[in-house]
Image 1 (tube, rainbow, N blue to C red):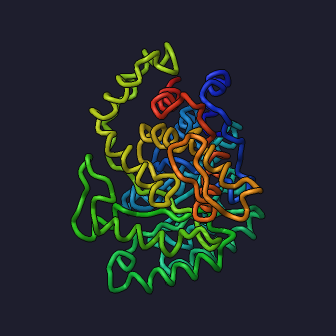
Image 2 (cartoon, rainbow, N blue to C red; image 1 turned 135 degrees about the vertical axis):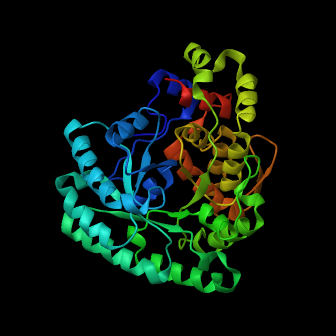
Length: 387
């Protein structure tokens, strides 16, 4: 699979100076953690879940979470587990291309049970999402995952969700972060990414952000994100990929754009028309939040609606200017440091302070590609939405 792999090769060639790389479930953790992109959540109760998974691959989704936790009622858990086993068997029989698949469980015991019940179809599973992760509950989860790996004989990743009240509350945040850091460091090779549960953070104070506000506008939430990145997102080799919080609103109707998108992936001059339509349909807040995610050190995003996938991926593509700066900073002859004017002659590139940014940018370029000089977000979005 690859990002933008669902669009025609000729269209991809017209968009990218450097195309996104191919990757799969057996790729390195380094690549997969950066390539998660818009991770689409789906309740595990959906009766046609196998159809949904295959359909989303055709829309550019590369990672999905099948949820047994907050997205379903407590009384539905047993039925949802049975449904997952049936749907995995269906997917296995079809042999279709699949995204990276993860199951969000409620308790450690579900991990071994599901791995056993999935049987041979566990080969399609990339790992588990672990809710309300702290040191106290995280260790049993990680031990269960380790045992399940041995039973099924394949690599299984963990994606802990940081969403507990202990992490939110100021008086317990420091110790909670310290405990989480020790736990994920101990099991580093199995932790693919850390996910932020902002909805739970807001719930603790009876808050809900409006569609024109980002998570960073809610100062309690923004403070937690900053502290999580501070402790767990460092660029010194100790950090982890941390993904952006969920966006709750989804009024965008993609069908509005289909006629013009079919005529041309570049909109034939209609870029401003699409940009205006996006803002009018409550995606302005999402676009700002994605930009703020990246500015604050986050990569990828939790998504609960397919209409969010294309914007997340379009804004994850590295611009030609960013790529040029990153390459200049990392040239071998620059190893001693120094300052230079950028190739675009609009900024200073300082080799030592900007090195970590450049390394992260080139990793993002590897998995999401580099846009051509004349290609921007709107053209990438239009191509991603086109069928």
